[in-house]
Length: 216
Image 1: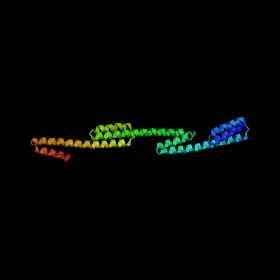
Image 2 (image 1 turned 135 degrees about the horizontal axis):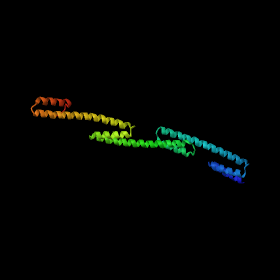
Image 3 (image 1 turned 90 degrees about the vertical axis):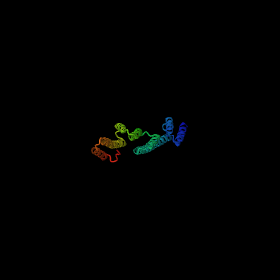
Image 4 (image 1 turned 30 degrees about the vertical axis):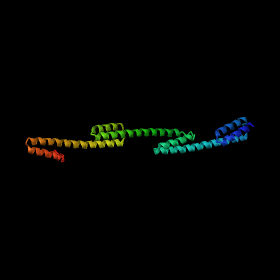
């Protein structure tokens, strides 16, 4: 009677998917009656059910892990984490879970660092451009040079730095030319005041050769 009662309870547990409980009840029945054929058969079926369930969990876990790996390759960290959670929820003891989880954490850390870099570089580039336009060209270039030393892999930073350097050279050359023309114009005016029209004309022509639109 005790064996039949335990087997009945075990059968109900198995029907509701509680296989571990069903096996435990069957084992209790076998402790009471080790040679009970029905109890042995039931125990064997439950063990087979458990093995099949474990195999299914392993297959599902591997499927979710593969999806997580694919999402990582596409840099879709949200989907990678979602697939990882599904893999964990299968209850499988697949050792790849820890490996893929670590890869996701590392990818998330790298993404955060990259985002921080983009934000910092972006703000510094904007500031340098503003300084450059306001005439603080040397300060702007120095700012980007310092930033480039900290982030040598930033292509946008190096491109902008080279652009500002080139523009600075062009503006510097233009300013020097204007300064030279201004000086020649002053010397021409001084020569004219002294009555030396020939020298004044020569100096004025040299100034105009440098800056044709020079009003002086």
